Amino acid sequence: MSDYLWQWPLIDGPDQFEPWESSRPELVNFGLGDSASDNLISVLNKSGIDETQFRRMVEGVIEILWGSFWGAAEHELSMKALEAVLLTSNVSELPALTPFKFSLFTDNHGWGQKLTLEDRNFWRNCYKVS
Image (cartoon, rainbow, N blue to C red; front, side):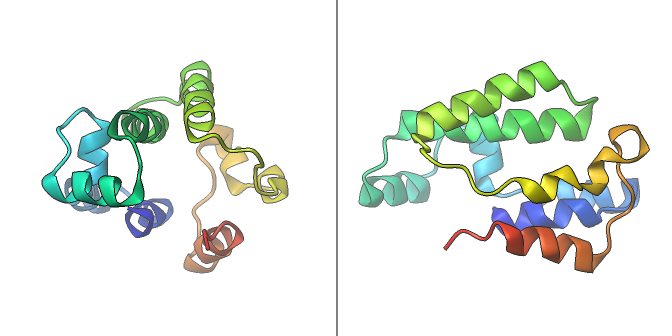
């Protein structure tokens, strides 16, 4: 799912958006309410992760992203969804958020300036999960 989401900042118009959106991974559909596949249930069981708790986390992420993709960003709903994700995941420490202070997404009334592949890779490498 991570690779899929990192393609988003480079989408440049509806001709690129529709093919990208229609190729969404299984976790997006799961976050939108679809049943978990046998494969996902197997992975969760092997990892000792509760399906209901995992669904809450994925739903929160999808709420933030898909709400912004398909309409105007709703800051209050996004913050509630982020809070639910953090509480459900028991995150005790956030990564350094300094790069967001200089985010290009703050430009152009929140739409941001067009990102280059290099810009996207910089952001992606800032927060790689090890």
